[in-house]
Length: 473
Image (cartoon, rainbow, N blue to C red; front, top):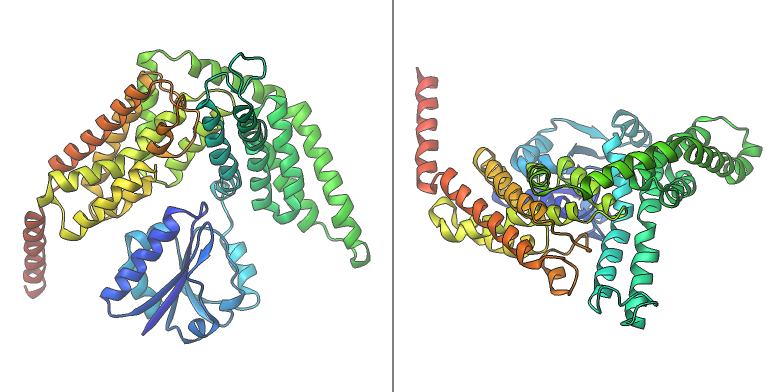
């Protein structure tokens, strides 16, 4: 018996591949043949027409819309990637038994889209997806320019370096400057389709140049998206005028209205709000910084790459455009410690983990060092009551120390690898203290809270025997 499917998350990184791996491993344990196409940063393990035709069950573990045309006439079960990771066996059983499945037809795609309308979170995550390549690449290129010296990119400086100047121009003046426009374009495109791209990018650019920053970009993206969606998809136009309407009227009207709204309505109040927030964050003392850091740590570890994690990391990335670089450093520290803490715990407390978990734990060294918090998810899924609080305590420790020490980072991603670039972090020793402390606290918390494998097995057997006796009685 063969099952196939597709996995895809909004950012196309961790959840996409982890859900596919979970489903494939579980299927193998159930003596089923399985193949899952991963639509991540690029599409891999692509399904063939014959495989789709021969499959006994099709599972779509997706958090975004995908092309459904090739599944026309087939029954599919659609779940979120997080459910596929947490309950792979149940998902597979339901798919095989026909529970919660629906047939894909010519109109099913339209019906599904209407029944499962994307939320604001989906739209924002789409914007983040557009924005991230500019943020990560631009931020790291800026960081590389600092390797030549803090002022090496300034033509007026005595230690000016042409290469440093070029890197600063590429990363800061160009790539990083596209962060907010890309955010606005991504949000608008998610809402209105291709028609939303132009007004969305204009709204984002106006926000970036007008001072309302990433908050203005988010609002502008929403305005552009909903307005363009109405003009392009809701207004009925005669066929003979449709091409002219879509080509000229829709972009002209949407860009004009959104532009005026940004300049005269959004720009001033949001700029004031962003300036107030920036000044407050820059004025944080050790105590206030510690409290804010604790909040960042809790949010980063609460769902390890989910909505809460993404919201605080996106917020911190947005602050970088306003020159506030401490929160992103705290986010990176807090995001690194869950996998690193688990990796350390599997070495210090081997009796608390199965042989399989001990092996998986070693990969967490690389995942944690690379700032991939999602590496901790399999461990959290297997024992959430004990693991998640341990991760939260460790991440809060790391982020709290980082913020209290005033550590800033010029790079928004990269984990420990960006530490190798001079001048990226203003206080590397304290940052290392924060990460090591968070890692150790996470590991010790896991060692304290988790039951040993033998104790857990005995407890499960007792529960099974009790349940059997109750049934027989």
